[in-house]
Amino acid sequence: MTFSERAYPIFEQSIVDYHLHDNVDEPIQNPYEGGTIEYFLYLKNWIDTVQWHLEDLIRDPQIDPLEALALKRRIDKSNQDRTDLVEMVDSYFLTTYKDVAVKEDATINTESPAWAVDRLSILALKIYHMREQVERKDASAEHIATCQRKLDVLLEQQKDLSTAIDQLIADIEAGRKYMKVYKQMKMYNDPSTNPILYGKK
Image (cartoon, rainbow, N blue to C red; front, top):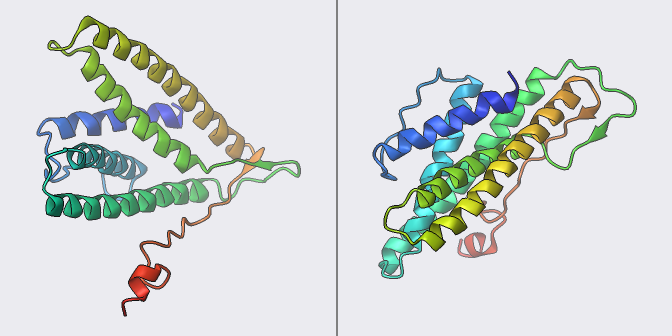
């Protein structure tokens, strides 16, 4: 089983589990053993799924400004949590392949495996919600046809991205590519680098 074949059903499970309650405040019930890669993949997608719905809520044109500010703060924290999880998944890959003999002509990829997996997690959400649109009973035939065309593209993208992820991992495993992981170093969350924050001290 390839890594994408392992990860994608976990993303789908997380999305389905979230929609049992469809509530951004519903506590996560991660079914996987803590510390395993499956646990972190489920957690990663759960965070993505909650944030997807927070992004819907904040776009309500009638939203109370104070509520919108609270949601914006929550989305900011969610983004940081997502980044932390991506770095945790990359640590898994680094540990897994730390003893691989890297070939002299090995090349580096434009992104680490975990950032590609992050895109696969988001793609699973797009597919789930686009399929919802296709299955709507209250939408016009034109809307459904448009969404079906989009869904077809998303499904093709899921196949291509999964193939690319698995090829990248296979190349790392064989020493044809090597990993370098750079921390995101987001400055706006850091009180010592965001001038709005350190300027108020």
